[in-house]
Picture (cartoon, rainbow, N blue to C red):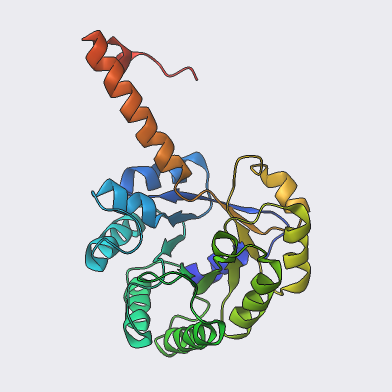
Length: 259
């Protein structure tokens, strides 16, 4: 079984695929050591850890180098978050997808948000892009490569459910392997998406929506925590650096973490 097939199969078991999100080699290794069967990268975490803001502000070559390093230092499948593709047109985005596949990832997240203006990419246009990406991947030998189509309606629309389902159906018909709907929180909405879209649903935890076992009962197949662990680590560093300075004492650095 190839890595692509292995990763694809993880979305089609009776269990929920719980994925941690890494931003560098140490975080990826920690997640692997912790027992995760697959990990994703976090574009937010990678960008911020290198001094950039999220939203394709980091040079793609630099971003891809981090992804490559992660892939080379873990044994489990890695899915790469490449935002909206880091390109102004379909050929550029397709090239970046192929470059990402070439570093050894098992899949990507690709979102339908526009990066240089407000709104979402036209549904037909994005479906066409996904079809071209799938065709290019297949023609380049990347069969079973996992395309997780991120749908940003819950971040940008007041009443997003119907459009989310329409977009999800279009994207799956165009070649997406699964759909990712960050921001969805209501049980009824999640169950409706699961019932009407013939592809695995990935959601993002939110305060009050954290229990993977419950989400599995609602039909969710994949749960990833995005930049939450990165943000937690940064918050810890900020607070602990201040405590160290105030105390002028490094004893806390050598205490066992009992939390």
